[in-house]
Length: 635
Image (spheres, helix red, strand yellow):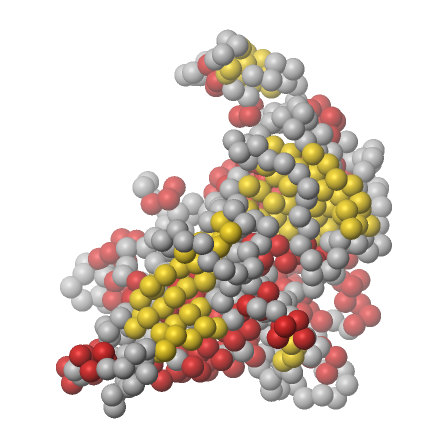
């Protein structure tokens, strides 16, 4: 789900080669920036899985042997889908592998570059490959980039129980520190942010309380959270009830069957921003029980407001009023004995459920008698989330105690925020159909047919996958006063930059800038601490029209990360954050030919310089000066 991580790596490590040392304020790293490392935590389904079994596939010339690619091998998926599913599916209760085949995550950078390497499939499944090329181009050392792949099918507690993942992640930070002599920059995309959050909570039980912050300061310099589903994502509901193929050549029913076998399927469920749990961390030091469920409590706002702080009810479902003596949604084996016409007796009842009622299991209990999958989901919800000894992940996340935090996400794309489901009359796993979808778009709620819907829409919309209210939760991490800057995403001379300084920020209230937008221009809006916790910095970046899955390919994001890290390390930086006054080309690729003026655009930065092999005029437009010289304008 993301390639951006290497961008920041390129950003910070390339910068490391340009400025060997710096000394800045308490929120910055003191020392040699060539000692920094980059830790990449990929998102959901962004790590290769390889077979660890020998599986003979009947009626297919393609078998599975140890270390064969499983996720993602589209050739075997198309030719031997049943065999492929055996290697992907997990037991829905104990999360063990299929008796005939097991898969494990690959390791190293190769696990996150291309999911399905090949002449055709490689570019289509490329994740981090191009960013790694950029890192190599800028001379970054191979041991400065560290990928930490994980089995994205597992709930966090099972990741640790089966693979000791969080123990290994802690050792990765400590090894990087010993190897390079400095802290790391963490870059996480999508589900990778949930993984990192759990790691920070798990770490509290591994390190003495008085040394916890000291360990974080020593090993982590900055955290970049990209596309983080901080309050969950509604598409998880669609994947759970009707199936979400993610573009794979499989049916929605097959996709649902596979997705619901993963305990991680509940990790990104929507939840209320008003409901929290007791701090189980302190119970470990006060003699409290180490087991059992967290005490779940919601403040009064949850019951006074509608929709648990979401734009609308997340799910609306029709329940048959009469069951006619049999399961309304029979399994395949039961179909011959069932007369489906009896399902038409009586009018169905429509029930609506908020985000809180999804996270605490109320919704699943309401439809438990109508779907054979729900008992398994309820079991995993209770075992792996509500009763987790470390953290209930279905609760709001306060600002992590890291010196520098950057929260980055896309906005202004039509995003699903609610669903209407009804029985389909078909056997499991195709027993639900979506009858309507509610989208947020341009500050309004609209149905699939285009009709306006009542609710509480946000100031804008999300990134096509995660709703705006979930992405923008990190605005609560900002300080009491915030500086806001809105600038065009493309190179600009500063004429269209808008600034608001020292804007008052109230916790749990959105920050909406009083600024204009040209309909033909894509902007990036920066929210940066004017006042914050001493020694801490927090920033939120909103990128117009940046898609959740493609934001990691955004050259705009790469540029801003580069400039921010350059500013961070420079001893003569004059402000807490890099200036937004102007943006010019930084690489040869940013120069282009202006056909209207018959010259290279940005003549103060770019010039026409032909090199043998150039095939068009734009290719011969190159920077006049080195990137190091150009970057001096941004101090």
